[in-house]
Image (tube, rainbow, N blue to C red):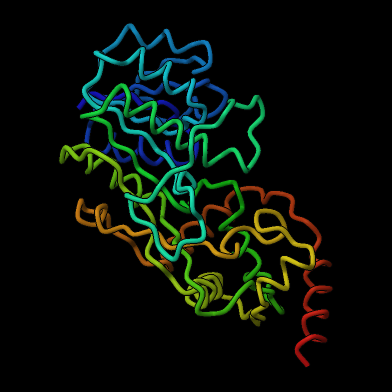
Length: 321
């Protein structure tokens, strides 16, 4: 299969590229060249920025396009317009953030989306992310109504994820001592190994899948995840489970001091359609182990002081005595 990947050397794109090359697909990477020039020597390359450089795509034809990094609807319209008639399929990696109501207990692919943003911002704030992704989906469906494939991803984790939203917990468990963990041990989180996502994208293309799919992880109790962090690092931390509402009122942020997993009202996303199309989940311990191995082979990012954690634990102890 002849495939164009828009963005293919970062986190998710890197793993999709690797999975495609294992199948001996003919891969062309469209990226800026700021990272990953040493990766995938067998792949063809088009070095350009999608903002202003999308015209470079009109020189080729592909069986499918996989767009891993679209965020602004105007950029998607430009890419879809340039590629219309030059590809049979357009695969777009969207997000469950496109759903309008984040307080529902569960969401399937029929749930309503955010309306289109009134204007596309020059700088994207967190509140803009969901509406922009919903707008991107509509742009794909306008140009590829019968052959578009939209993967609404949840929390994607694993090796080469520099966001720290997953690796923070592994590294914190490895340091040992008393560890503040938001919520309750039974709280569920949907963590999808990036390699499982990549395999699903490739297999969905091979099987001719079309339409919209929630591509999210297995609902996993936080206690199981944290136990895996301890086991795979060989540490013996002591976990202290702290009420999320207390944390919201006392300072730390969900994507700053305490990355991910604990935002109040986060729903679970139904994955029946994707599972029927072959989505498979590896054990959480395997994802933790491989992420830990990768992080130990790289310089660790700077992390904030842990003094806030100790102060919060003392405050929580006083409240619960």
